[in-house]
Length: 297
Ligand SMILES: CC/C=C\CCC/C=C/C(=O)SCCNC(=O)CCNC(=O)[C@H](O)C(C)(C)COP(=O)(O)OP(=O)(O)OC[C@H]1O[C@@H](n2cnc3c(N)ncnc32)[C@H](O)[C@@H]1OP(=O)(O)O
Image (cartoon, rainbow, N blue to C red; front, top):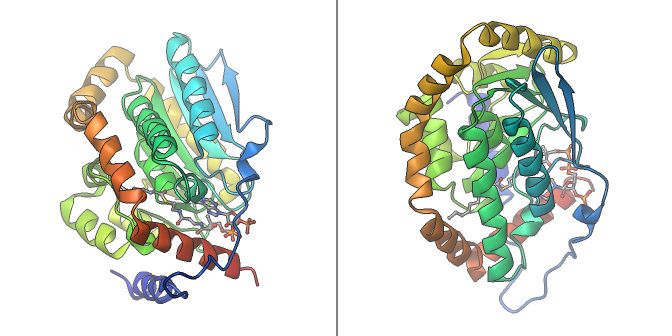
């Protein structure tokens, strides 16, 4: 781990200690309204000539993965998957500085077990659809991408990140006092290997772009204004490979990981619900939300 990554971890961890005593009311009220907007959270541009679609995530402020967002994302993905003319998908963000802030913490804080279960099923669905996609999938990561945002990028076939040192990417769940589930861990280990994953997950490491490139978490760095053209160039290379051969190869590589979740889906939902609704975990999430709020003051 580089010194810069270590410093970031230490800073984040020291801020995570809960600051209220037993029986005290939550010191902050968190808006539950942010994700109720009815404007589309995903915009898809499909070019039938090239066979490539670009999916723009446009859910202000930070493309957090709420139940509504995930539902829209999966519907969009399914439509493209069913369109035989669509061979490639580029995923990017329309929000400044952020690719995706990961799972919407407000979906995990103060919610009923039933609602948490519904939410987790949608997270699983997003991963299963994207990791198992027949399309060539490229993440054009034009901003920070922690936790579930990093998972989404890792789930693609290729990752291009904007070379902007203030952006970070990684599975930082432990910093929130929560645990990346086995299929998050498997997806990362399949990309960067066991040892790097073991250390990154325990420490909740968030890498800057050059560190992410060094460990293989992303495949390429480009100036931010070139990210879509670089993704299109890479896509052209991948499109030159016959679809059936590429798809069978992709499936051969990913099927064991996908099968592990599909055969344990219900247990994984139950495990999430039991874990996330624990008082101690709810306190950690509340502390983290407070930190996000305080950052501004
Ligand atoms: C058994 C298994 C159990 C559990 C498994 C759970 C797995 C969990 C996976 C996850 O993905 S958890 C989410 C992790 N995400 C994060 O840690 C990211 C937190 N956010 C940030 O670090 C930053 O917001 C940023 C993405 C780097 C962007 O920074 P910026 O300065 O541009 O924005 P700001 O921090 O001011 O945020 C704006 C606004 O958005 C709210 N916000 C941010 N992230 C989230 C989020 N993930 N969910 C909900 N809301 C989020 C933030 O509070 C601000 O809100 P406000 O405007 O109302 O103050």
